[in-house]
Length: 416
Image 1 (tube, one colour):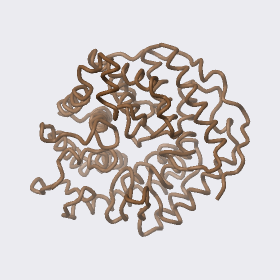
Image 2 (image 1 turned 45 degrees about the vertical axis):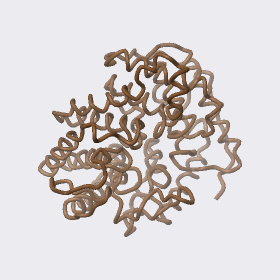
Image 3 (image 1 turned 180 degrees about the vertical axis):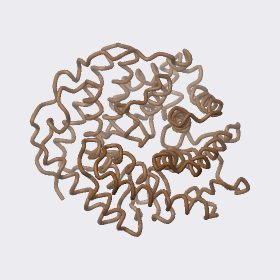
């Protein structure tokens, strides 16, 4: 299916490069964090030619969000201008592309969602729906229906990411959600590369990025819009029941089958892998807790809260994270614990937040005082993405420090 011709009703306005000032963030924990943010910003400036992805979670649009947020922190217009340039490049590249990736992580959906966040924060004169034609949104809805028919309901690379974005634009997505509910399997395997499958079948996958927890999170976002509220609530009840049944009755040595309430269950994997944003227990717990409180299931919610506190104990030197990034690393762990403490007022999470934050600062270490040393010693840190790069580290650090919890916050793209 081809993308209909873009009919841009308005060009990207000059205000992209001249945003209105926002309040300066307060409460950054230490000079080390400030240095890390600075080195991320300047490191990307010196290596811009390495960027070959226009997307929200792995490319230009995500990096643009980092620079706009960093502008809000520093009040240095230089960074807003960089953000505006990146946005313009991302939009122009995708408009001129002969083939369009429609999905969230690397494609059109992510770029439009990034534009929507910038519009909400005052950096765009017009909403994305006025910049692009309505046909673009109709196209995405059609793609989502086709993906649902193929049982590709992945959040990053399938229908759920499109549904979440359309919902953020007040699009009625209950028909798409109902179609997903009809399927016996939430997720069929999809191939990311010739060597790797991004996800398993529904019965093997409860995760936020690729499975049932992602569906639950999208349902909760839809419920907050107040459309077809009873139908959506019934779906949330059904998914919660399914999730709780699986995780409390299944004993299997797999990250996708966490035995939440059995302390004797032995994982072969390091315990910290349970905390990963994309495929771990902690993000499943976050969205289950949110849904159960919405449904008034306080007893079940208290069990999930206790499990979160247990996860907070995975803070020993033997439990090193896979990396420092958001998808499966330290900043993802830190940010999830921060959001759990912030939203659900869970106590005893400060130690976990401080522990995983320290792993990020230690990773950058004293080399943050030297940009040249940083580049030569940590080339992986020059990855640009939100999920697997330094943009996500920077956004996460600023989010933790500022405590922002508004609907305009960037973290809605990660279902938080």
